[in-house]
Amino acid sequence: MLKNLSKESILFVDDDKLWLENTIRGLKILGLKGVEGCSNPLDVLDLLKLKNYTLVAIDLWMPQKPGEVLLSEIKQHYPNLPVIVITADNQIDKAVNCMRNGATNYLNKPIEPNQVIAHIRQIIENRRLEEENISLSDQINQGNLESPINYYATLSQTVVMQKIFDHIDTFSQSILPILIIGEVGSGKQQLATSIHKAHKRSGKFIVIDISTLDDPAIFFSSNSIDSFKYITHEQIGITVYIKNIDLLDFHSQESLLVLLQEIQDQYHNTVISINEFPRIIFSSAKNILDDIDLHPDLNFILKLQKIFLPPLRERKIDISLLATYFIDQFVNNHNINTPHVPKELLPLLEQYTFPENIKELKEMFDDALSKCNRGKLSLESFKDHMEKQRNSDIFSPSNNIFSNCEVLPTLKDSQYYLILEALKRTDGNQAHAAHLLGITRQGLNKKIQALNITPE
Image (cartoon, rainbow, N blue to C red; front, side, top):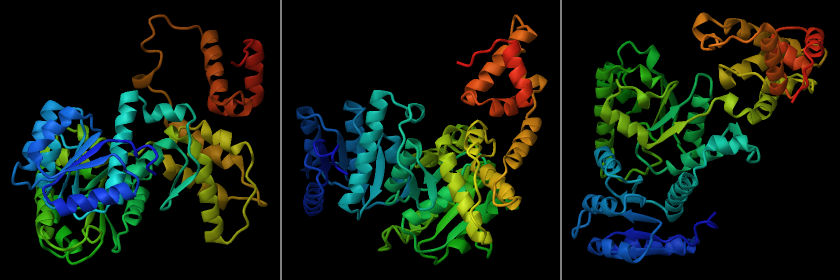
């Protein structure tokens, strides 16, 4: 795990010498050889002048110089140097202020060395990616894929999802809520369930849909039997998953902010472990962080632990993995034999855009499996579904691709390039290209010959 971290220079600053010594000893035992300690915050700026540290971790409560002052000084002189705050103060307002002032992360004591390493690794990896200007989507396009992963029942085999799983692990010791942003059907609730399991929560996984609440503000602020406070009262280790947070009006957002602070105050200075602390996960089908109607304080809190869940069309390599899972699930639930799957099915699915993502893929397989005849899965069920979706997405004047063309192409040229693109998207498979174009395979073959098309 530490092959890439063993030589990194990392400075820990804490006036608690015993904690500092124990932590550094534990980190070195685990392989982080370049870690150093400083018990006097007054010496930190001088140390930073003498050595290029990869990262600095500081405490907040230090009599010689408060951590918040030290943080500001470090960011003033070394704006690109990542700084982690590790403190026993678990107040949300403290965390927000530190993050606003440039802290890369805010962790709560007590914390184990291996958990500290997980956060350090994530920060360093993210920084390296930024410096090399490598995006996750570029890695996928280059085919840089991982082996199949089952992350607490969330399945994937792409780099982008592996990065998300690694990122989730770094949230385990944080008191802040998590925000999942993803399109409808992209698996936000499944991922929230996986977070509940990954963070070793012993309590229930509770789902709340904002769209079903008559008055969200009252739900967050009252003490009634149906309120948030009642749901979480005296329940240890629960995860509360709140869907459609983008539907909250400003007044409801203010009530939610007050509630979040009350929860932190309730558990402040208690002996309760982080695994017993209520975990709150929000989700939204749109990027709520770009919404001008979002309360600034809530916006900042949600930015701290956010996850952008990619749509299925951006990780099509996962289709075969998910398809296998859905087939096995249906077979087990209905006690039937595993059907024969035509080899043409996967290429057919891979050229589809899946506007409703994983949810739609599951529905397609459930429908096809329920109609399975003589132990063979039929392609027609999938084609019928795609055709209905195609008809519902038919071109309209508002999205006419020719509306911005100064010179219109001829009908012959339009057909030529349209067929060429269809063949390109289906890797030259004429049956699938014909389905994309809404014509028969024989009709497509005639047009290919007539237009003298040679697939690229």
